[in-house]
Length: 274
Image 1: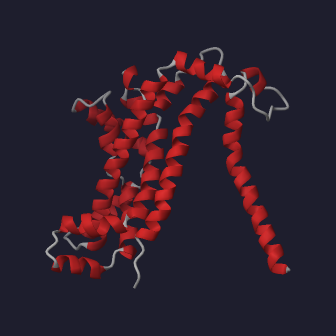
Image 2: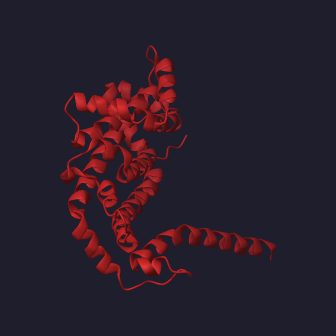
Image 3: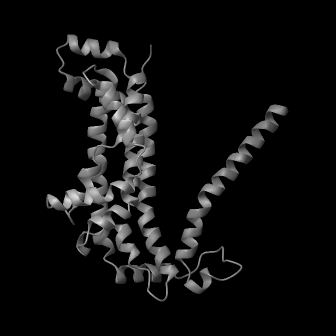
């Protein structure tokens, strides 16, 4: 009886946690489907309105949403692909190879994680402007293609997940260091790469400040920069802004659902028995 009661309490706590997690998204949908007056009313409306498609039409009329969407998808996809490749390669190297200066290099890498990214905006912009990358997608993709956090994350995972015996067997079969990485390490690193992919894609998709600094061509604006133009000087249509936010959020939810399944399957595929 006591065990059953504890199980019911645990389920109740989990349901409350799920409700708290889902409610902000539900509230976003409610605001996106109402007019500004209804959003600012007190007590607030908790039911869906009938202005969702009207607000979506306003978003499309005021900003080039679909161009910004494609820009963001390209930047986030390219950034994530680059981060997964270079961070997994560097993390695997730090975890399983011995070379001169390894400790110093890894220590310097950890130090960069303690520096706020905003402090690097001015020197980063001066660098990309000097080499002619200002207002190009290269300025958004290449500077962050080797993430210090990503390298640290992969290194920590690889140290425990990749057994030295597997690498020794690969060397006996004549594998080069890169083939060890490609054929042995990558399949085992799938769970870590799935998490890093989710983390990097969402971070790139939601990035606002660096694209705002690096881009001045409206045709290359990402979603976050384009949606910021919906704010009026004297009045703000919150229903339209929330509709734009909803349109920018839905692809992230779909992406997370897809990759989270890969995350679970990767844990099973990458398991190693001693």
